Length: 148
Image (cartoon, rainbow, N blue to C red; front, side, top):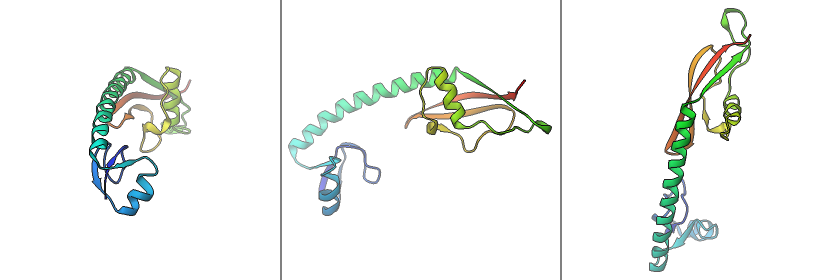
């Protein structure tokens, strides 16, 4: 069975692609959920119109996220933390801390978009990556310093 995808489906393809799927998968999953439609000339024309509108919207959205990435890159987050012997931190700086800092600056970012392999547990300057969009990421300069 051939179908035209109305939305991006991880295992199949992107919006507007014509893909071949098993009859049951198409009839019982994709079509009822509105993720795809059967291939015919009217549907192809409709998808072409929708694709143009969607691409324009996606380009504007990407431009907005690029502007936000530049704004984040201009920021510097200073995180004072309590320090014990040998400059060992009590606790750490987490993605939640970075998300809270950005909220104070008027940028509402989910902490799951902050890409930290593990919490930061060392003094000094660090660079934190933030994924804003599948094609756009930002870097935030983070300075972990001694409190008091």
